Image 1 (spheres, rainbow, N blue to C red):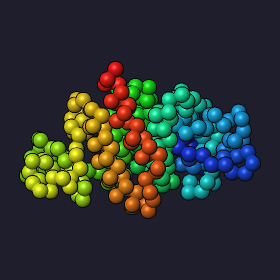
Image 2: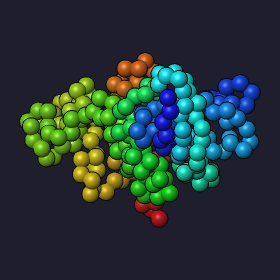
Image 3: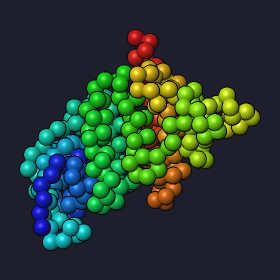
Image 4: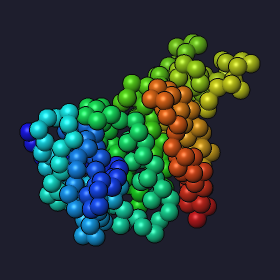
Length: 249
């Protein structure tokens, strides 16, 4: 069997002296793994950095077995582009690590995440935009993997406007003014997550990260019996500062 596709490198691990097993998120085949002969060589090593996009050929006996990747072309070398930008490099690491842990081999849901992930990665040059896109990406990830939130109407009154909070238990939106004494137990819902035209402040980014982080931890990662990557915590500390710094300039 064989197929050709475009893939985003999300992980690699050494196999033997000079080979690597490469994990990629592909456009049409979900998350896939394959052996790259000579992948640890000086010539190929830079091409296989996380966040890079490749044209790949997969060859194997059975689709469920580990096959071989023949690398046809490097389409985008993102790691090299952002080498001097610590926040952007951290974002690449976190995005790839979350995808690696959250997706199973051959998981078709991964293909639905392919274009949004590339869009986010290719926006890392703009610090006014990518922190907002990152929070939205996490929200979309939850939805794509079956853990989406209900942000359409209030869980208490069915109101479709004035939504300000989310229940940490049900993942349903709430009009905070109607929550009474329970309001302090709710997670804040920043307006930019329900209205795309709304600007986002540093506080909004922080609230958004707390919201998506809660459900990533309590739903997605609890479901697969793993911890949320520690690098995600470091990124969540930096993103509000990035927005705050650019708004003050």
